Image 1: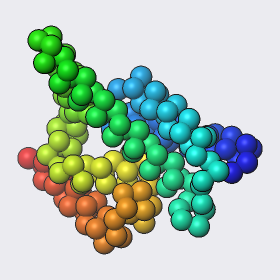
Image 2 (image 1 turned 135 degrees about the horizontal axis):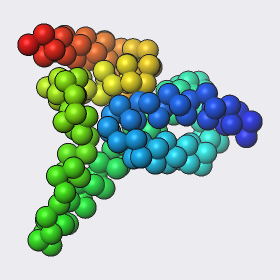
Image 3 (image 1 turned 180 degrees about the vertical axis):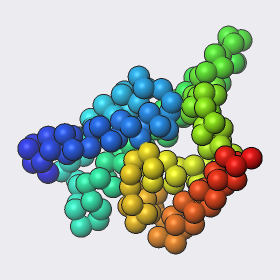
Image 4 (image 1 turned 90 degrees about the vertical axis):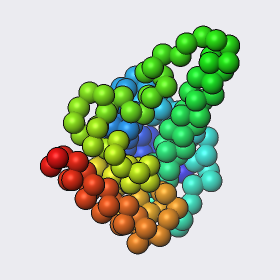
Amino acid sequence: MRDEDFERLFAEHAGPLLGFLVYRTGDRALAEDLVATTFERALRARRRFDPRRAGEKTWLYAIALNCLTDEARRRSAETRALERAGVPAASADAAWTDSVADRDVLGRAMDALAAEEREAVALRFGADLSVPEIARVLGVSLTTAEGRVYRGLRKLREQLDA
């Protein structure tokens, strides 16, 4: 991937990627950091990008999901270390991915979903990915991705109707 292609990739996807990460984390500052980390990793790996394996958007969102997972692991390890040291961890840090759930009805409904369903719904509506793109990002079959989105939406409707 050439430099001008990477600049176009950033211009085209930084905004929607930020929206997706804000949607997933409920924390704009954290989401901005994750966008920066995502593009840094993409820049370093741009020579390995193979358009025959996945589209640019799919590749970028896969990197973003990895950054999100790494951040969750880091925060979890930090919380455990603080607990072992006898320092009380802030409740917001312990549940950083659920902070949206504390603020609105949709967040509470999303909490009722299985992790796989929540991820699929977030990719579909937070990142505006198609179901085939979701399948590629998550490394699952098209049928599995469709099922996760469908089940997630059905459960969300049930939660919101209640």
